[in-house]
Image 1 (cartoon, chains in turn orange, yellow):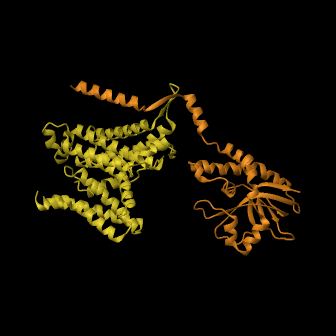
Image 2 (spheres, rainbow over the protein chains, first blue to last red):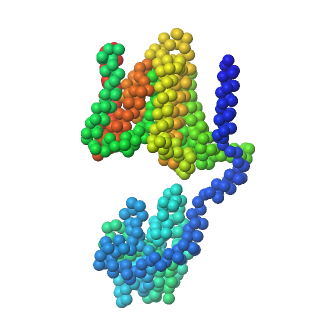
Image 3 (tube, one colour):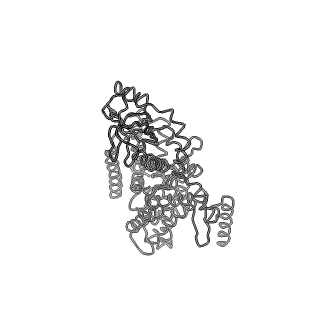
Length: 210
Length: 321
C-alpha cells in the first residue's frame, strides 16, 4: 500500500514538472553570451548619447546672457522658466550655452565674464574631477523611469562624466588663456536655496576658444 | 464550555473589535476599502510566518530563524530566476522558470526547517539555541549567495505572486488565506494536527502512547521553514527584488501574533484562527497608529506593551487553571 502511495506521488510530481518545467538546460557559452547581451552597457550608451542625442539637444539650451540677469531680477521666475529638477532632488539643473572672455585659469576652473565689459567672474567652467549627475540630468533627455535598475542610471552619469574628463577638459585646459574668447555648452547644478548664480559653476560638454 | 472559558477564548476577537471600533472613530480613512485591503496585504507576510510559528509553539517549541529563512529562500529563488544555476563541470546552466524558482525557494525553507527539527530532536538542542544557530547560518548563506547586493528585476510573472491582483484582491492575500484554510484543516482534522496538540500538551504522555514525538517535531519545523519560504517569495515578488536583509526582526512580529492570538507559549493550547486574529490585531494597530500620525518609535512601544499584556493574560489564565 505504501509503495503504491509513493508511486502515485512520484507520478503526480513528474506530471506537474512535465507540464510546468522547473528549468531549461542551456550551454554555459550560450547563457554567458545572453547575459552579456542583456547587461546594460553604460559606456556604450553614454557614447551613443554623446554622438547622437546631445548634438540635437543643443537648441534647448538657454544662453548665459539671458539666464544670469533673469535670475538676478527674479530668481523664482527664472528657476521656473529655465531649470529642471529630478525626483525629490533639492537641486536644480540648467542646460546652457554662452560665450565670454577668460578672466583667470586655475587647476580646476576657468573663470569668465559673459557680459560685455564685466570684470567679475560670472561663469566658472569646471576643469577638475567631475562628480554628480549634472551632465545626465541637466539636458532633460534622460529619465530615471526608463531604467528599471537605478544602478544602470547611475552608471550613465559616471560614463558621461568620464567622457567629459577625458575629451573636453584636456583640450580646454590646454587652450584656455587669460584674455582669450571662449564659447561653451554645458550643465550646471544649483542648490534650492541659491539666490545668486554668480559665478555659475558649469560642467562643459563643448568648448571652443578663439 | 462555561462563560469564563468562552470569554477567554474570545479575548483576541473582542480586542480586535474594540480596536477596529476605536480606530474607525478616530480616523475617517480607517474603514475605507483601500485601507482595509492595505491592512490585509500588510499582514499577509506575517500571517504566512505565523501559521508555521503557531504549529511550532503548539508543540512547545520556538523558531527564531523564520526571518532569516525568509530572506534566504527569497534570495535563492531570485538568484536562480535571474542568473540560473551554473554547473561548470557539465558546461551547462540550469535556467530556472518562475515556477521552478518558487519550488526551489520552498524546498530551501523546507530543508532548513528540517535541519532545525533534526538539531532539536536528534541532538537534543533546546529550540531556542538550535534556531538561533540557524538564524546566523541562514543570514550568512544569504550574504554568500547574493554577495551582499540585492537581486533585482525578476520579471512580471514572478512578481504576480507578490504584486498581482485577483478579483481585486492582492495575490499575497489569496495565498495567505489559502494557507490559513489548509493549516486550519491540518491542525483540526488530521492525525498530524492531533499529534501536534498532544506533543505540546504533554510530550511524555504522547511518547508513552506510542506516538513518534521526534517525527512530529521534525515535520512541524520543516513546515515552519516552508511557510517562511512562502513569505520570503511574497516579499521578494512584491519588491521585485531580493534584499539580503529581508526578514530582519520578522520572527518577533510572528511570535507576537501567535501569542496575542491566544496560543500558549508552553504549548498544547491555541489555534490557527487565533493567530489570524493576532496578525489582524498587530496589523490594525500598526495601521491605526500610522493613520493617527503616531511616531513609529511610540508604535514600537505600544506594540511591546500589547505583547506583554497578551503573555501576562495567558500566564494568569494558566495559573488559575
